Length: 102
Image (cartoon, rainbow, N blue to C red; front, top):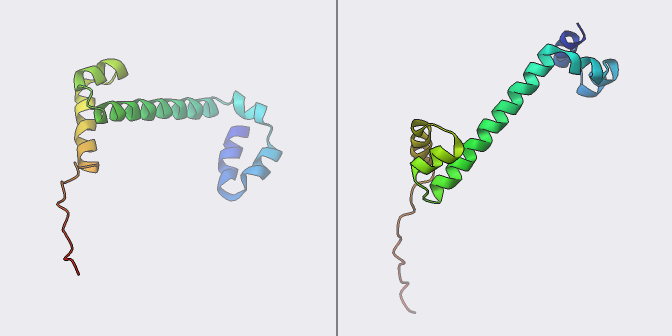
């Protein structure tokens, strides 16, 4: 009941007010709170793994090794590789123009 109240109260009240009204111990006992917490941890872990894979790919580590070390599937690594290539295309070699001497 307290967890539901906190969630619904969050729509209209400030976080500080809700925290004063409801003890954090009650919230931690809530299965919904625990589910939200676990979901957040899983999302954080997935993002960290993705970032590590991207860093490895940018360092020219083979897709097979990236998959092996991160636990991602080869298809997931290849998809990241394609996304990474689209986001940061290789810089074009620019020819410097010489300014005319005055």
